[in-house]
Length: 463
Image 1 (spheres, rainbow, N blue to C red):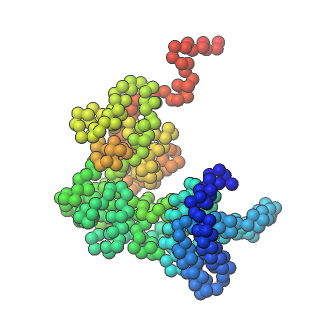
Image 2 (tube, rainbow, N blue to C red):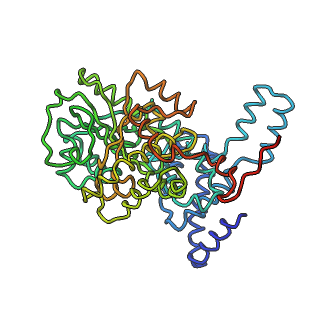
Image 3 (tube, rainbow, N blue to C red):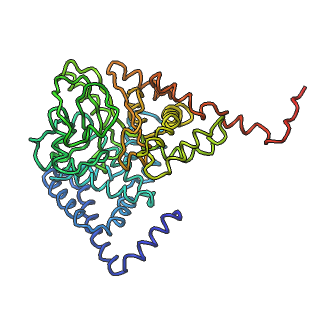
């Protein structure tokens, strides 16, 4: 047992009184007994009834009982080590298909079949998705539960594959239960109320979501789109509730300005790349003159990266102006002072371009949003100055936002360049900006380490 686990268990014991702990463990024991019975049941009708009972017993567990339940999932529903060793030795001795099948059966934890059978109960899927959400909340402190997480993630990648997903447009006539969830889940640009939401669903706006038949009123992921003339360089006009409405037939550009994953329990199950491409195709069919599909995306990792890059900047050639621009970011409301903002503009744009193109040091962007879009096959097209002046926009990315351009005929090549060759596909403008950053002119760390300290003469080269 590692130190973290021991500490966590001592903490649980200190927080939950002994009498209460006994009551919780009895509840867990009842739920686990039903799970064992469900796994041993072969009759389909009685199996469905047992699945309902087991699911109800799990649902009745208070939050404080979950650690005991997850511990039992590990101790009682993991692969049998002896059977696994025997199957492995048999396959190693004779690598036949029959021995491979036995090995595969031995490796699969009984937990996976348990989750499949629990899913037979009405409402089973949302409960199991929520189970993973609750598991993820404490997984870092309980690494021994990683096997449960891996089993659920494996199953979800099958249960929620594209063949089961339904793409639906959300508009003002969508049931209120779904519209309320848009307001609740929106994670990029807060929806401040019904008036705000209504503007986001007007004729020159589109909202699409993926749904799953087992979660009919629960969007898995949704995307918000503005239909515009030309690429948008600022998000505020797109979000203004009183912004004038454009005739969508006059639009030539679709701007994806927000994409939100709604289900924490489905973390790691990829929907976004499918959603963007399918929405682009659907809009292209609806509006044949629409040829430009672009995002207006945040740069959430920029300020954090910049804080760590300051020491390197100090050693770069002619860093004074850049360091002064970075210092201005600490001034209150710097972006509201025209002179201060303009003085920092050129340097910060160059830093942001360098971060997006070279931030990972191997040509692979470290920014999570950049990784997502570049991995989807988009091109890094343009950086927009003070495009998001909300508090979050200023704190995370100094107000800058990025247009990632999706050319449907190029996404496969761009995806391969990024994933296989670790090359960021970027416009000429952004590459030029990145080269102007002092960090682009600095010597690599290996060369700096090889240089003697200042004031110390270098050793003469060997003859």
